[in-house]
Image 1 (cartoon, rainbow, N blue to C red):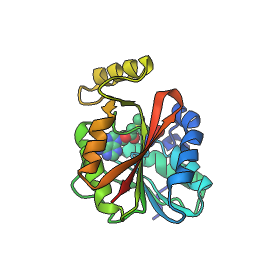
Image 2: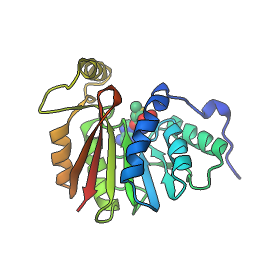
Image 3: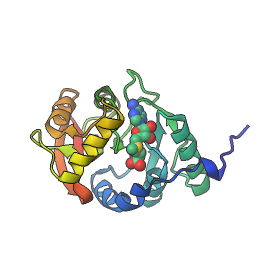
Image 4: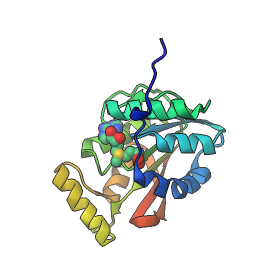
Length: 205
Ligand SMILES: C[S@@+](CC[C@H](N)C(=O)[O-])C[C@H]1O[C@@H](n2cnc3c(N)ncnc32)[C@H](O)[C@@H]1O
């Protein structure tokens, strides 16, 4: 029987409306012309709907590890009726195995600072496994550069994250790039974004 999702399941994140267009501008440029994009940590699912609608030549595969997020993604998907937006997958980035063998691109927005470092390790290992040579991993979020915060707002954000969970925190760009490189992913672009965020583009060798 088909599962139904009430409108109460469809959560909203205020940051999505602010960041979705700047992110889309980068995605339009770096994503492949066709194929499947695996989104890790889709959260509410609002980005998935927005990007799948704007990029109809791509198939969008949302995922998250959290049950409430999965229900929200499914509810937004059902409301959208988009043919190129797949049902969400339960996927923990930190897991040694993912329920996906291959993706043409991997996208993770606002995830690596709000999860333990082992989730970033899993994300890089997983992207290294599922991407073909030349495949893109796209990350969006706040980063430290050369061990220092790049703005007072990021410093406050980092302190707030660490207060909520000592294993969370704004990551060092260099450490992320080094970890990525150990999984065959080369940092090819670092795009400044509004509100002191960065878009990081990695390519599978
Ligand atoms: C701040 S929210 C960002 C959601 C969405 N990408 C956005 O930008 O609105 C962080 C998300 O990361 C997910 N997450 C945290 N750790 C994860 C992991 N190990 N694997 C997959 N998702 C994870 C959480 O469930 C949550 O949905």
